[in-house]
Length: 256
Ligand code: ADP
Ligand code: MG
Image (cartoon, rainbow, N blue to C red; front, side, top):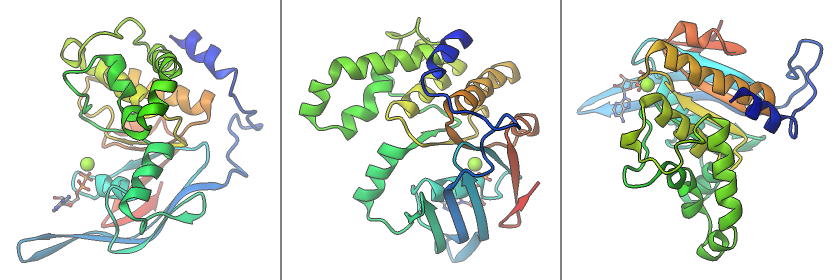
């Protein structure tokens, strides 16, 4: 698989600087300023985020760690416009995205954001290939989809080969292992060539070895394709492999 990744990467690789990375002058791609978020539980208001400041540069691989219940998923959802903050701003490529209307948010998510989760959320009745194509079926108009059908299929197949699933194109999710389902979910997240991948505990449901394989795919996508990644994890060994780790403590981000 690594040779396929490598082969693919040579077409889009960017020149790293002397440190092997190219982040020094890279612009902020995604950022949050002064984020507050509370949830209401009955009569109680439970504050979760209490003034989060957080920036991700283009090309960076950042891990967000913190205890269970510390607000990691909440923060990732706000960054990905799946939910809106009570206060504060989220910016993508310099533009505010936290107060966009739902259609604009959906467009942004389809075009620029890829997301993966602890549970893979594959559609059980679709094949692996069809699952990867599903976001395009939703985001493209029918005529566009039909017109681009061959190219879409080629792109989905290429991505599945890239994550090492070239031999599982027609399998249904129930015929795949957990690691294979996460690989399919990664390919699906990449089908629209997103600028950032948001990953919520992507190894959380996998054994250590399989989790490490998934991490290596993410690492390679980041290094060789320049994909910006924000990954939430409670696993310190997984987090340690990112470029940078931030910790959520008492509703705020602490740089490690
Ligand atoms: P983490 O991902 O770090 O485990 P979460 O962001 O999922 O933490 O949750 C942070 C806190 O917010 C938890 O106490 C959780 O119970 C609460 N919470 C999360 N989502 C909701 C929701 N939709 N409604 C009410 N409470 C929520
Ligand atoms: Mg969580």
